[in-house]
Amino acid sequence: MRTAFYLADGTWLRTLDGSSGRWGVGGTPLGGNSFKQPLPEVLHLTFFDSIDNQFYQLIQPLPKDKIQRLFTTIYKGMGDEQEDSPPKVYDTFDIGFAPKGWIILFAVGPGIREEIGSWQAKKIEGDYTQTVGLTQTGNLEYLKTHDVRADDVKTAFEGFKRRNPELYKRWMEGSFKVSADWYKMLQTKYPWNLEVTAPDGEWSGEYYAEYVNTER
Image (cartoon, rainbow, N blue to C red):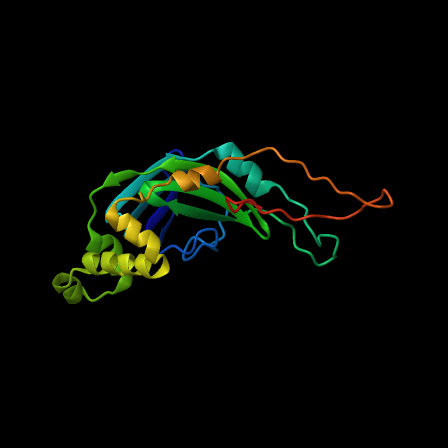
């Protein structure tokens, strides 16, 4: 996976190479790299979906005003009354990868997380050895003589089968379709209201909420 951030005028800010982590948790390098000013305005993302055996690419202008608001506003949270409590600000970008090239970008901070946007990446042809293989080993002779793409796809299939044997069987039979629809459903926001019932008619406290799309 290769991720690059730019300004709108094409000025390069940062490029990151590495793998992703579990959904909602992040991995390397995206799940913990703080960004300094200036804030990015364009996202360039190229990645390989092992289950799909397909390269995808996304070149997407980012919602500059929303990112500016998120990354410059201090948020209050539980425990902020303590003198040594650091200010809560969004300082990290986290990317969620759904099947078939669906991408969701989050802003993340200490105990806070908000969706910035989501987009559909395009299928592209890519050089697996250059974009993925070299992140695994610098042994060029090994990469020339081994089909690392086929090995990685096989490993992904075996992992899928081990974790979800029944779902894997349905998928192989054609009765289950891998798609981004489930993740898109989780992104749907519904209005809700918190009500607290107190016997004495008084209540003072805080609450914590985390949504199914991992916002909190």
